Amino acid sequence: MFTAESNPTEVCMSMGTLQVRVARKAVEAVDVCSFDLIDIGGKPLPPFSAGSHIDVHLPNGLTRQYSLCNAPFESGLYRIGVLKDAATRGGSKAMHEQVNEGDVLTISAPKNHFPLAHQAKSSVLLAGGIGVTPILCMAERLAVAGEPFEMHYCTRSRDRTAFYQRIEHSPFVSRVQFHFDDGPPEQKLDIHAVLDKPQPGVHVYVCGPKGFMDAVLSTARAAGWPEGQLHYEFFAAEPVARRTDASFEVRLASSGQVIYVPMDSTVVQALAEAGVYVPTSCEQGVCGTCVVRVLEGEPDHRDLYLTPAERAANDQFTPCCSRAKSARLVLDL
Ligand code: FES
Image 1 (cartoon, protein in one colour):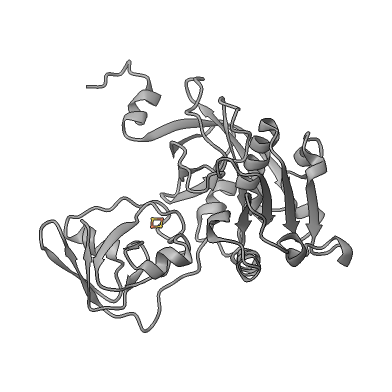
Image 2 (spheres, rainbow, N blue to C red):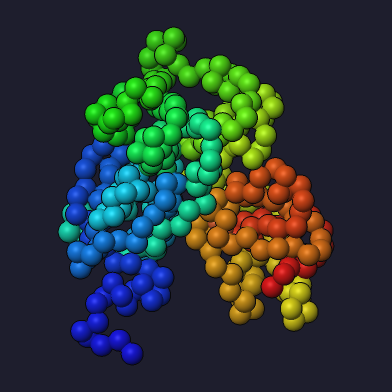
């Protein structure tokens, strides 16, 4: 039993969350703020690896995922960068307008669905806009480890380039190329030149808006890069509900229970109605938290998390957003 004397951080850690204080909020570029989060008791925070993100529970009740962008060896703080997105559903607006220095936030411990590959010969890091956050963390890690890499950072303009000064003053600035949409043609990113030929042992990492990522990944795949050397993390998904969505059933392999999924419910919602809880985080098909094995039936994949090969195998899906092409799915639940 926890008492009033218990350290609140320990209490929350027992539930898988942490309480942190906003030690610093800073404008990093037009519409981009960074937030430095520290333990409310001044203790070191749990360690994290490059590519990690945290769930942030916002004052308006929403939960959002933000990549950690400080160097992984900085144990005293988590730094996140947040773009105030015009198409926001309320998450980034709340961070910009309602969260201030001194505020206490509840967050998850770091999770990593976008890790650096071990024993890469070298790395190509590609960031579009606010997708720079995990990429910058990777650059810090690779630089400290003395591992070779190059980084390309594409933004609309210099004044929308978050962490520009930090990169300019970093020890790895010589490995970074900035590409501004409003700059001269010769400085624009030539994806074909960068990903010209697949190189054994070279790993490619990309994060940014969907159009940017699609361009990078389709170029890499067309050039013959093996899927295992491509690493990516989408940070926002398009709405995936379609007018043609139909109802279907899921059967739980463990109990045989059959649950009806109406056309306007997700599988996660239908399962929850039946008292079956699947852990979720992004609820947009980007984080992979909810992935469930599919034993029978054909999923209708709507996520941005699984690789093309994983989708084609049809033996797992993301029930937060994906549906079924067959009348029934049998799930390993
Ligand atoms: Fe993130 Fe389903 S909860 S992919």
